[in-house]
Image 1 (cartoon, one colour):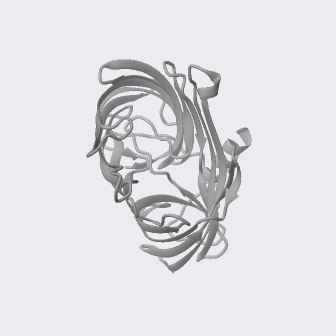
Image 2: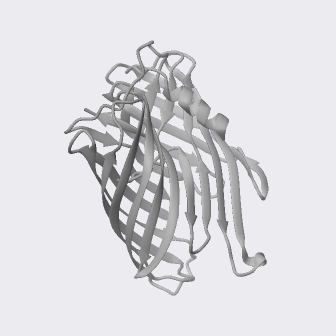
Image 3: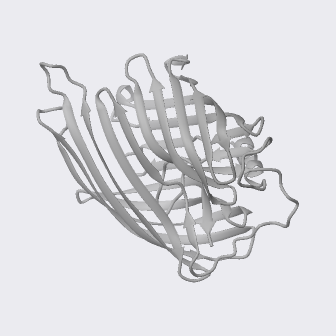
Length: 350
């Protein structure tokens, strides 16, 4: 674990430029988004009432062998534990996987990047070793948002033995080159600055599944120490796992929103500390035309959260972020308590 974070610190301490060049390091942000937390690289979660615990670490990294050819992959470590009344009904799950890829830039310009990508995956879980059972074909466009920050649409088509999957989405990547020898970057905020993490914009198509979701979030600085956070999202889909004689289809829809306030205890330093608190609401609905397990579901969520965290600046507009957040969640009026420790990346529009 310590070695993994040391590697992340090293990668994020490099200096960035707009065009892909030989020797560049590329960090792909995940598709998580929240007003209060950033969990692009993973995190820890524990529910005090259900005793459910989760741990994830899943950074995606690439290295430019030439100005056009990039090799990389995702290293994933996932564990989940669902305690039960008896030992025989307890559910424990773990998975360690590597999803390597090879990417080629047909266009590698300062203002536009166009690439094709080929990938697969291999891993191990409690059932044994698995892998090389699917092939991922991808393509994407990239446009510079900031120095070293590239955004754009992506298309991924995954070939599997039972079900092929097409995903249309968006992606944010950080391009890092060799450090320029400048002084240490610092968290120097000002009123009007905008802080963002990864955003979610995705549509998935498969033989029995159609699903789409959007979730955007970030912070707006009211002063040099106070920032207001906002996250909004919506999603929905249709799933059909039945046969011509047995109806096992259902539909889902979800909306969510949260507001928060963040105060920075320290500024103008390489490592800054903050406190944050806020509230969120959500609604989750599962509908089915026939009785199917626990469906239908109609759930209203409300949450209060607060915590402290830190940002380690690797560039004036880029920081690695982690913290501890305590959540009080109400699901249809039933309250519960959970704690989370997310790890992610933030970048700044000044």
